[in-house]
Image (cartoon, rainbow, N blue to C red; front, side, top):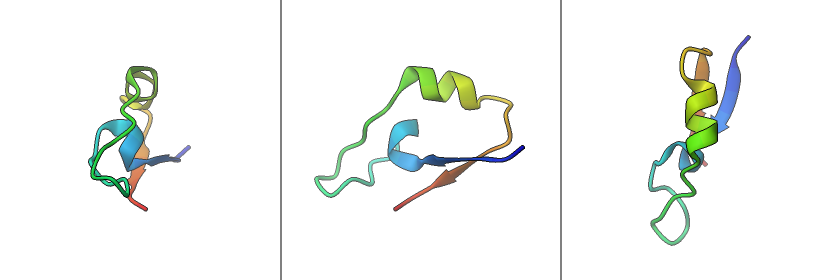
Length: 40
């Protein structure tokens, strides 16, 4: 299964203000899951 994840949740600085919403829980969940990082 492929999971689309917002890039800002994985630490990519792509928000309107140049920041991110990094989530350790999301990062840990996505490791080895075949996730796709999606920038908006």
